[in-house]
Length: 535
Image (cartoon, rainbow, N blue to C red; front, side, top):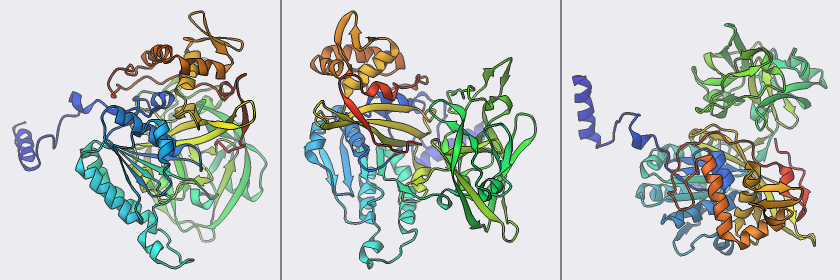
């Protein structure tokens, strides 16, 4: 111990106090947060808001609410005296809309850089100042490298933006933690089927809905019209889903061969390309980023049944749950070995597209095949502590047919501070200041039984709030004191700080499922489905 004490003393002298500390120190166990301005998103994040000193990525289709959510985070930080900056690479920030959301334009710093390099230099300088609470970078897709701007139209710049992102985030990550600033990156979605999301060796066994397995090579070459077992992140269960596309992506130079532990003492083994997505305890990761000892989510024995729900543990892994007469292991199983293998000459690589969930099971391991990807390479996916997938579910219309808002869903696809895969739904009202706080309180309180719904009527303590969801929302908007009283009851249930409390929150227990989509429109507004692929 004397040697250790001497080493610690020497490190403190060289690098300053706090260079190395015990993990159990209380000040290092608390996750300091800033509210997102959305009660349902705060609950889904598991710690009551956006963690400070971390990188977050918010991605989704165009006009899905990415910038709106970021502006709400800024507004919440400003309410608590925080200083914020907005790096507007898209040159499209609407000051009047930001003001309606609650942003104080007089204290918000904004920059509209010309190139990606300039944007990251500005961001780095702001981070290292240590004076800011929130920095929004909107967006990664618009961060065009200088070489591309100075080049000719039609020139190819493969990988330039990815290298820029990788270099910038390597420099920023440590400074962000030291400055205790939350940095939010928005990103767009691109569609690219098959090769982009990796492939499997032909002998990879795919789990079919009837419990048997079939080589992926046979499924693709014969275009087998079958259902496979697919993991539904919302219900936490494996369920049958039909194959809707088959991909023979040509010859492969190398594969990564994984050996994964199994509950019966045997092992799972499969080979895939490095860019295929595998389900880990923290969400989906590229195969090339997975290391020996990491946990991959697997199915074991009887829990193939659709009724077998995966139970979330406090550390984000999965745990045992009862089924029938026994208890079957449902857990992240460790990777025992990873080898780079060269396939036989002429060996092809294969993939399939699965309807809805966009994932399937290969030799017991849950893998992904989403046709969507985000620009900027893998660096942001790696450095982000939290990734939020935001989608517009349906339009909200007035009686005249005018579109006044949209029902929006946020899915936590990666979370290093709480269990991932929780979801939140809320209304974004275009003329009412962004996210509808009253709508969220109404939905959550109804779900918890705080507000009673009798047919189309909403009641609180036997008092009538309104007939239909929109009328009840309007009543809460007109009576903010009553809304705050109800909201505090919801906050107590989920372990969040009360409205007059601090911005920090202790980790909370996993919430029950969020309000269903059907609750979004009830007797007060109509909705129109946008036919989005929500997988």
